[in-house]
Every structure is written in C-alpha cells, then in structure tokens.
Amino acid sequence: MSLLIVVLGILALLLLILVFKLNAFIALVLVALGIGVAEGMDVNAALASVQKGIGDTLGSLALILGFGAMLGNLLSESGAAQRITYGLIRRFGIGNLQWAMVLTGFVVGLPMFYNAGFVILIPLVFSVAASARLPLLYVGVPMAAALSVTHGFLPPHPGPTAIAIMFQADITRTLLYGLVLAVPTIIVAGPLFSRTLRKYKTKPPEGLFTVRQFTEEEMPGYGVSMFTALVPITLMAVAAVLGLLLPAGSGLRQFFSFVGDPVMALLLSVLIAVYTLGLRRGRSMAEIMKITTDAIGSIAMILLIIGAGGALKQVLVDSGVGADITKLVSGTNLSPLLLAWLITAMLRVCLGSATVAAITGAGIVLPLLAGSGISPELMVLSVGAGSLMFSHVNDPGFWMFKEYFGLTLPQTIATWSIMETIVSVMGLLGVLLLAQFV
Image 1 (tube, rainbow, N blue to C red):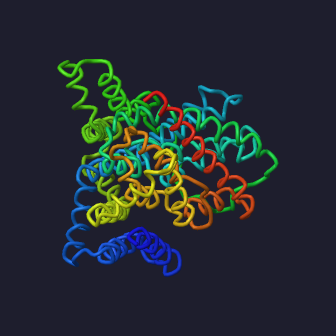
Image 2 (cartoon, one colour; image 1 turned 135 degrees about the vertical axis):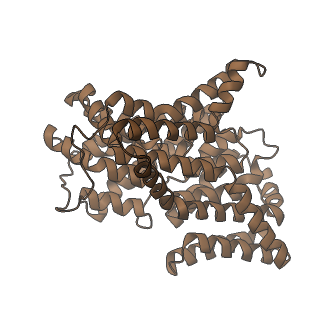
Image 3 (cartoon, rainbow, N blue to C red; image 1 turned 90 degrees about the vertical axis):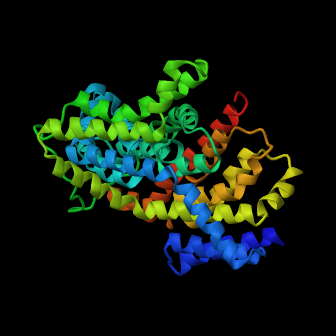
C-alpha cells in the first residue's frame, strides 16, 4: 500500500506541474506533505520531516551553487567566456571546429548553468558556422552536448552536487568518475552524432540575439580567462587524485583536501576572478560586487526546487517507504545502478526538468544504496545520466534549442531529443562499465 501511495504522489506531482502549471517548488512541498500524511505520519511530523529535508539538502549546497553562479557571471560579464571560445577556435583551426566547440562548451559549461552557457555561446556558434560555411547543427550540437554533459554529470552543477550530498558521496571522487564518463559521451553525442545532421539546413530567426558581443579590447587575455575558468575543476580534480594516491596523514593531501573541497575551490575561484577579471581590468569593487549579486538572483528558484526535492526524499525515508522499496527490489536481479537510471529517466520524460527529475529520483532510490555495496559516486552518475533522458516538449531546454536554431518540432526531436538520449544512454553504459572496477 505504501508503494501505491508513492506512485499516486508522483502522479499528483506530474498533474500539478504539467496540467495546473504549478511551480515545481510548491508542487514538491505539497506532494511531500501529502505522501507523509497518507503514509500515516502525524501532520506535525510530516512538516518537521519536510523542514529537515530542506535544511539537510541545502546545507553546503547553497554555498556551492552561490559561488558557482558568481564565477559564471564574472566569466560572462567580463568577456572571458567569449575570449575562451575565440581562442580555442583559433588554436584548433577551421578543420577541427567541432572539437573546438566541444572544448569550449566543456570549459564554459563547468562553472555555468546550462541555459546561461547556451545563451552566451550560441551567437558564437552562428558566427563560426557562417565564417566556415558549415551547417549550424554541425557546429552547434557538439557545444550543446558538452554543456549538457557538464550539467548532468559533473559537480558543482546543481543536480549532481545535490544528489552527491543526498547519497553521502564524495563530491571530488564523483567529479573524477564523471570526467571519465564525460569524454566518450561528449564525443559520441557531439561530433559523431552531429555529422549525421548535415541534411538540416537551418538559420536563426532574425532579431533573436541581444547577447552582448565584446570587442577585442574589452576582453581579458586568453591565458587568464582559461586559468580563471579552470581553477575550481583543477583544485577538485587534484584533491581527488591525491586522495587516492597519498596516505591520509600526508600534509600535501590534507592541504588539497581543504582547498579542493567544492566550497573552498569555488570561493577561491571567485576571489581570483574578482581580481583577474575585475580589479585588474580597471573595474571598481562596486561594479564587481553588483555582478556577483545579480548572479544570486538567477539561482534562487533552483535552490528552492532542490530543497523541496530533499524534503520529498526525507519524507520517503522517515515514513518507512524506503524499507518497502528495498524489499520490493531485493529479489530482483537488476542492478541498483540500472534501477536508479530507469526511475530517473521516467521522471525526466514525464516532468521535463532534469534537476527536478534527478532530485526526485534520488529520493526514491536512496534506500537501494544501503547494503548494496554499490559506490555512491556511481549512483550519483547513474541518476544524473537518467535525468538527461529524451528531452521533449515539456523541457524549456527543448524550446530554447528549437527557437535558436530555427527548427521545426520534428526536427528538434530528431536532433536535440536524440542527442540528449545518447548522452543519457552513454552515461548509463559508462557507469555500468566503471562498476566493474570501482
């Protein structure tokens, strides 16, 4: 009976979001309370569970997302993101434009949310395609694939970071495994897949772009731009590698464990960016702080949605549903990694939002982790991969891709939706392969 209540709760969540157009944060809180009461919890206990779930989920996550948004906005508003793009294209040459766009999407996407990175890079995609006389999708899909993979697989993005906290996974190790999966996934979903799309002749609608284009003099240098963008990922990756190679008592390991913590890595990156992209370029501290303050507004609702997903997770745990889920799947031969991907993928197809699907799916499959012997880091990546499955008309990213590339609905499904599906399936296959060694 308890599992039926959960199913009805998920259906109610779909109804509230898709039919009644209720904000995902409000819908998740209402469904969490409803499931808790229906499972027999006292009303006050259900409310306390919701509050605990939100508080536990948003603990260090608020700092990570806040600093990440600040860094992304500093890169964007200083012209550093544009400099990185042009610099990579120049270094790769016209013959390797696809790989230049992959690396651009990857580097710019690491500290930025998908939508922000897409809007910043899409004008450059069009200018590159026009100058090289190449089909837009041939140039644009590799960039979009790289942005999507960083969004779904790699901390400090909201989805994977929040899931890592829920699963008590090591974030730096999650990043390391995620990087291993990211490379083949981006290659297949980006350059290889885009070569099948040459038949689509598209052009952007006129007057669509209002994104600022920086002049040569306004942009910082390539080296300083790349350095600033890569500081957080470098610190976190070094910390993860040293954590595997050096003994626990090593001073070097302890130092990088501190500076490579996601919160510290991003804080240091913001402080470096304040100087390299702001003060050093002649901007006043007031101007720079306005850029960082504006960045926080862009993540407010994302934080609330993630917190509400944590509330649903906590209600499922406190009401005892987790034990029922564990009993249900204990007799099956399906890997918890596969089950996590399947459940999250179904939520993604139904809900549209990758973040909501990831947080909701993580809450449902969390009980599968206990006693399974499965690496929690791989469970994070499995859920992250599932959250990218087959984006379609209920996903804002679908419409963004459609309108910017001037595609028809069937064309968007044949390009964007299939690309996202490739990313999701490749992620699952990579996780299952890594599980043989981790």
